[in-house]
Image (cartoon, rainbow, N blue to C red; front, side):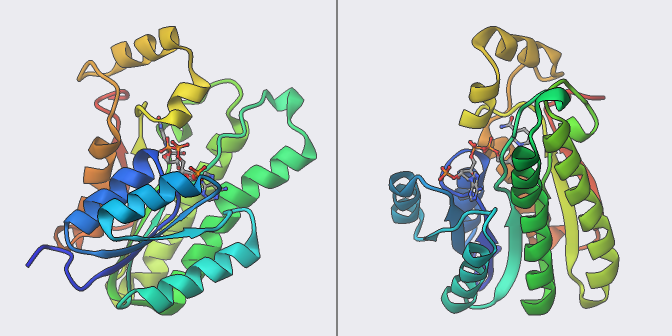
Length: 242
Ligand SMILES: NC(=O)c1ccc[n+]([C@@H]2O[C@H](COP(=O)([O-])OP(=O)(O)OC[C@H]3O[C@@H](n4cnc5c(N)ncnc54)[C@H](OP(=O)(O)O)[C@@H]3O)[C@@H](O)[C@H]2O)c1
């Protein structure tokens, strides 16, 4: 028997990057997994085919899509034991250039969607469940052009702390993982190669993170050994910030 056998998990944004590594890890540990993606159906079906997880197209910014995603998770899983809020968009823009539309979009995708998922999980999750939000080290390391990203992730971190208090009586834990620079399409889209080299040199371990490095921390917080850890924000950065 593997550690997560009999458990049901919903992972948002599982078609690539960190979310895909989380889907691979949780299914490898024995969980049944439903995951969402935004538009890359081919990538999502490849992950589904390889892992046995179920892929559901659902935009985090669309409440109807989210309701459908939650209903599908309830229908396909043996129960809701694990929720990993991973999907996010960066919405990179200097504060001076942020439009009302971009502001609304990034708050809807990165913060409101996580809040709706927490509300849903609070209703349906089995006792002893695990909620893990993938935040970012940028809530502690500000940089230009990430005001919306960092602010929405900071909101998510606060949701987790309050939810940890509200759900603790049922043995449900709620934690945040704060990845540093992790080698995914999101990181490469935001940084030219020379910037990646600088990011690498800032880490104590001397390399960029791999999605599997972050998935391992998520898996710990999603698993049976982390029951005494709740309301925490765990840095997973290879020692970017000490
Ligand atoms: N990479 C890093 O260095 C880094 C550092 C700190 C924190 N993080 C956090 O880690 C998480 C994953 O990042 P990543 O680098 O793996 O990103 P990524 O490579 O861009 O992958 C994002 C995943 O989320 C899905 N997604 C994006 N927007 C969505 C939306 N509106 N609705 C539904 N699904 C959506 C994508 O689906 P499609 O393929 O269909 O678009 C994809 O599966 C994010 O929360 C990010 O903020 C990443």
